[in-house]
Length: 80
Image: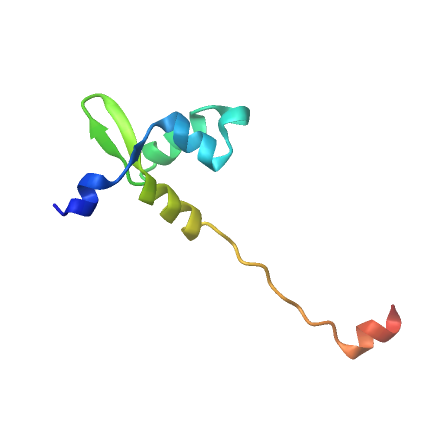
């Protein structure tokens, strides 16, 4: 295990929900579903569940959809 692993900040399920913006609408339900479906990395500390901060950032990056830039054709510009 590297020093980086030991220094990684472990977040509670509530903290993850707040970061993802789901706390006000569904509470801990969404992060717990991610854990149950093994869609996010988590750590068991006894009976507690903690999620590394880096895993949350990775989850957000993997699920970010980039916009598509569509050029309008000359024909569409003249019709408008």
